[in-house]
Amino acid sequence: MKKSVKVLLLPLLCALAFGCARDPDPLEEVLGAHILGGREGTFRLYTIEKIDSTTFRTEFEHRENVFDLKLQAETGLYQDYSFQNKPKNAARHWEAMQRTKEAMQGLEGLKAGMEGRLDEIAYYDYVFSGRAETGSEAVDFKDTYFSMTPSLEILTMSTDRKDLHKAGGRAIPGYLEMLGDTPEE
Image 1 (tube, helix red, strand yellow):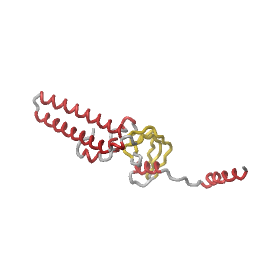
Image 2 (cartoon, rainbow, N blue to C red; image 1 turned 120 degrees about the horizontal axis):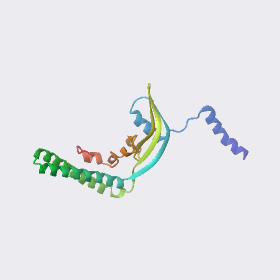
Image 3 (cartoon, rainbow, N blue to C red; image 1 turned 45 degrees about the vertical axis):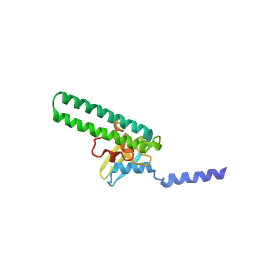
Image 4 (cartoon, rainbow, N blue to C red; image 1 turned 120 degrees about the vertical axis):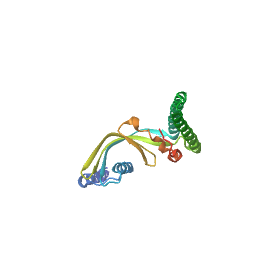
């Protein structure tokens, strides 16, 4: 018993006396690299908490709702301008309706291609506090949110949680390529 206490006490004393380095946290490294954006500097993570996760199925449903709302809005504007006999404005909204329909079809194709993976995690949401320092500049992050894929790709970052998922479709493989020049939201 005394021998095991000594064995456990030795690493603790080493850590206290010499400041033994801890293994780098991959999440902290990716977050720091994202925040520093290629600039020289340091990032210290004070707190981090995983607050939610989203499956591909849920993300597809959200994207479908976004495009449905966009289609409804464009259809209403097209009808209004047609009724007002403003053909140029009506034509602009007709084209927007067609692009939205194409995006909806593309989204259905992506969903069909991921049929076996729909219940996998698309991304996790985190909230963190930390500090980034670059040269003479320092930025404190307090209660900052970000979304990250399981492969550690940061999708979005925001100080307001309600803005966090505005570009969440990027977690869907092929989504950005499918959109091309079509506006997302």
